[in-house]
Image 1 (cartoon, rainbow over the protein chains, first blue to last red):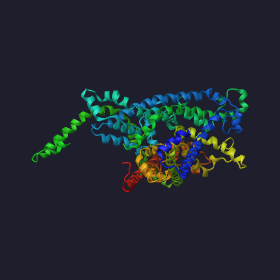
Image 2: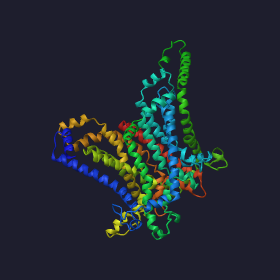
Image 3: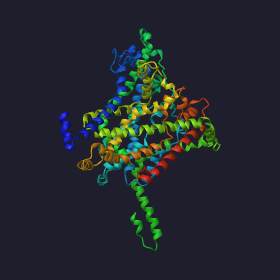
Image 4: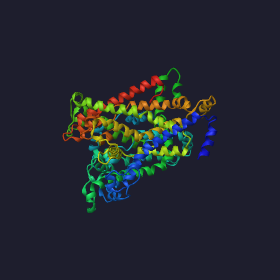
Length: 306
Length: 323
């Protein structure tokens, strides 16, 4: 490590002074500080989730798990509400993201074509929604009038397209799919739909990956729509259950199934929260590295003006 | 288009009309397939984004579900006056502005500093790890984020209070003290978003020409000097665009996090426009849709105005703007 680093530095830096060295050291220390500040709470939650109820209740966890146990996780997976919430969230995420992706691509592709007559008008219709909206109540009335209250559709339709995502997708298509390509395809009698399906989509996997991540994380973490539109407990996504347990402290006794544990009920309730935090966040943390390589690319495209 | 310019003097007008009409017709015909693809998204936008805008008129009406949006009685500005004259008006506006301004002042520079530090370091593996870890909190949901904050600040088991009591202090119920609310909100947000927000600055830094750095090095500029004179000016345009966007959001505090952090004890400093709109519109037993809509409309009108003004200022002073 040291040798490689020195070589690299020697290649880039012609002159190495003491002051330079100090600057790099301070810089690295600053980064280390940032790293620790962000990592510590995550490590703490992780460790606490694997500790025993009594250790959590007594606050004996500082860095590593104390009295390693899986009781928190056991309690979670024995809890029907959490399991149902998890299943619902998976459903909303999979179906919702598919709808999002379908509509966003259909929206972005025509807007990326110069030959679309009236493109600017359509572009305005889309981007205006980013700076102005009808707001909470009018949207609620609409959803109510459409009869979507207390149905799964309320979780899928009201946010089916994100205007910002349309714009980054359109920008990506514009800068990566050349006009010549379509002209050539058109000469061969290729329609727009066919072109979109068999040329544009295969050539823009990066932006598709970014869209999937953005939308899927959005659905996974979705709380607000469920909160205002759903009252049927069978439809609740994970985040609503999380709010009940983490924030409103509603842990019903059915959650603690083992009577011998009743004494440690409070401890288990405390522990359970840490385990829940991990269980709710881990799927996204696992998925993220797979799309990370596309990511910076996607975000950079978004940084360019549409 | 240049076909239109061509016709001879005598019957210029007629030719122009017919030819431009036929050009339009031709272009529409050529776009038909694209319109077809665009149809579904367009319908979605009209229904889910523009119908609510039509519904905004109930802010000027006394909305009764039985009469519908169109059929309800007009009441002019009564709902707005009610809001402006109510005792909560000053409180929710000050709280909203207090949170956003605090957030902007404290939260804006940190991602820039982080991005520059990441760009300076030569330890590539260390850089990658730091990036990955600092992005992680971004993916935590608001509910979980607030849950973590509440666990850490819990007076009984929270690690912060364990630390305070270990030092001989007394445990504090942070969430119940109105004075702490804004700081908890802002700094937990900084913890969650700094890494993510630095991505865009990193991208801007990587697009700075290496030749600039080489030339400066030949002139003997230290790395620190190059940060000040090359890196910082290089990311300025990006920073200004983002600052503009943030200023346009000054009256816009997201509902979710504030709502989840709210409790009766800290309500004095945690009631913002969005949560107040919710509490009069949907939460209360005697829900007043019109009044809540007026509050929301007032808020989004100001947001729109702000973003237009800020964009104009940026355009005239710095040549960078959103549109």
